[in-house]
Image (tube, rainbow, N blue to C red; front, side, top):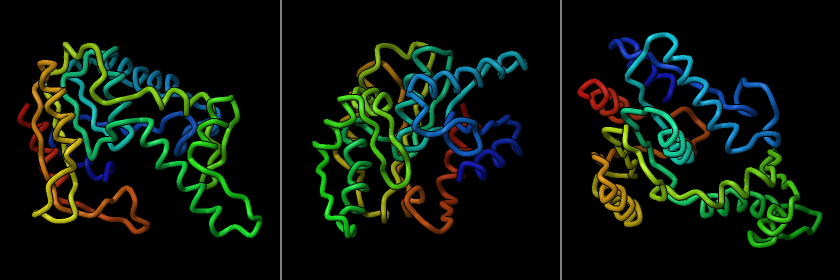
Length: 226
């Protein structure tokens, strides 16, 4: 989806960069070595490179947990526009959901090992790394993540617009109430926000490749019209 979006934007004269953050994708480093601040630094480094190429209007397109990263970056850099795709609202809740993957694996384990989200968080908070779904989650990253909330930013004085996209199973469903409340909380900080509802599959969770053309088209139009 990100590759398709980047190609669409580029074909319309909007230069696009896909960033593999440290410890992910084809980037160097291992996942357990990274920290939240490292990821923020990676994005800021990319923004500075763009500025050195003469680009003056810079935006971010972010998915899920990346929306929390985008907010952190926008507090430190001059970001004109931000696009949220199905944003994570609360880092601590998201961490709990991620740790449940470990619990699900343990249910099918013959070792008899059984944990709980609380036990795993206690391990992480005490400085111990935890393996989840084949990834070693570092204590430092987990602790940083627990303190992140989408509406708890101080200032986005340079950001003109946030485009918020909720992906729902069908067009008759409404986005979660917490999403609508968070949108209002952000608007109360004098940030112009436009919200959209797009029907489609949760492509970030799908094993097979899933395209949501309407999401790509709407995002493209939103950025072209800014």
